[in-house]
Image (tube, rainbow, N blue to C red):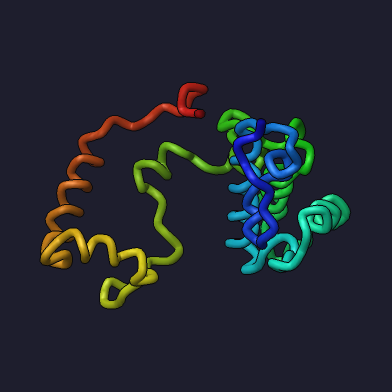
Length: 176
């Protein structure tokens, strides 16, 4: 008996083929989702054109028979990384933090420096305007009587806790 259902909406793309194909699945399915998200961020579109009316079978055929297209301006190493996250065969897909760290593109990134916020961000959103969908702030507004007044205090506490926390060491135990 399976505990999941087949999905026929465009969101199926965030789900690897294994769960929807009744094959069972492992952590590799989560890494597929990361690949889809990375592709969307890099290319400003989904990797495959699926409509809500597209059947599961048509979606599988589209994914199995399509070639991912990337803008030429993107770094070849980054494109390679996303291609490895979106391998159809889960045994060929990047499926662990160790495999991710071994990819050539990741060799250029100091993950400890990223965690410690030592890199200068290429974009910093303005603090003078709302930079998110207010729908996601609604829960906070319902729970707290004065959410904007308490937010600074809560963020201050969180930042102090982060500063006091030791630097994590990525290991096999960090995976689910």
